[in-house]
Length: 280
Length: 257
Image (cartoon, rainbow over all chains, first blue to last red; front, top):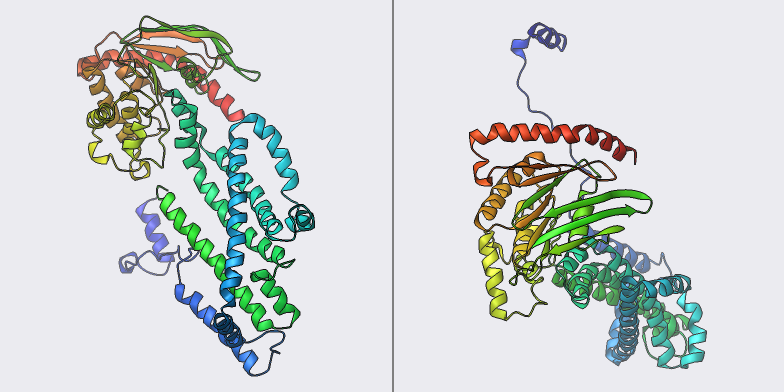
């Protein structure tokens, strides 16, 4: 472009070239980036509780349909005073611990087998694919028939529900381990068991831990369902009894307990990820 | 110890990748394999080190394995192939763990290669904390720790930027001048091949056949001198003349795949 053309353009833009002022280039790439705003989360939480409380206090919402947050706190106080909360929590905790651990251990074993051995994959994948979509609650009556109305059927329901997603997360994780790392180890004649221990297992951990996030939620759902049949204590039994008696404040206290348990599990898994996947 | 490739052919499904490759890599020799994209250079290297079975033919060793070698055919990978969850030290130690070595001997070997590759102060670092060039140094240290009889290098500089490539090339040259090793160096970079190789083997486009073998009759140490440049430029033109047309056809083939 010649100087003459430039000057002509500047003149057309509304002034003499010599008078044109130097201006900064405007920044145009704002927004579309998520920034942490913790205060907004807390504020929203406090606002929801306040509106909820206000709606109850003013009689806008009947306490039978939606008890006030203060009533729910009262129900918690009552639970602590009677000491029943510990009984409910310990029974539910026991079922969760045994059921989740059982489902997880079996799921990990089958998941690794399917991920590593062709025969196990040929047999395991169709079976898991066929059984995974079945809502495990539908199997509860059958499990009661097999394991009795007591702890066995409850633990088995949770274990069954946890097992299939664990298998899928594990073998998908094994599939996701870069093949070049395995070839590298083989090219140095590293024995198979060591390749599994040093290459496949650490490479699968992110997928396994992501699976834990899903399976702990599934375990909580199935815990409540299983405890609604033939249980005296446990969070599910507590919620069912409260519902039958229209004690909605107690019912919501049970729901809050589940929510807190879910948060504790999520925090625990987050802690595990920070410790075990620090290399990422 | 020589590596002898006899009549190696390979197919991926119905795709012919290599056709009747016959080649001998003599002890102490650096052979560079070049050829257009998709000509089967890396496939041939995988077959040479026994991590891919050829569809026909075989690879043989002529002569005795060096007694000190823990892993005769040792790869250096283009993408480094480092365990992201292991430190530099543990990435190197991984390939020693299954050998009958005392803890002191293992430690001494790791310390030695870390020093030889200028990685001693990075021994506790994780791969994600290192630059591409440093990661490839770890790959080289891991290969050296097993005292390989033959180094099989699959485009070891391709994933690096030009400056890092130059730095690492100087390191390779220094390493080779210090401790002469047998090596097969797969590359698509003619200058790389001419700076390092004693012999450049040119493969044709798919299915890869040996088109020509060009000897670089000049000691590596002298290749940086101005006098050598003329001869290297002549060899560069000769090699480029051999692969240019095929590289153009191969490029079109790859684009249409």
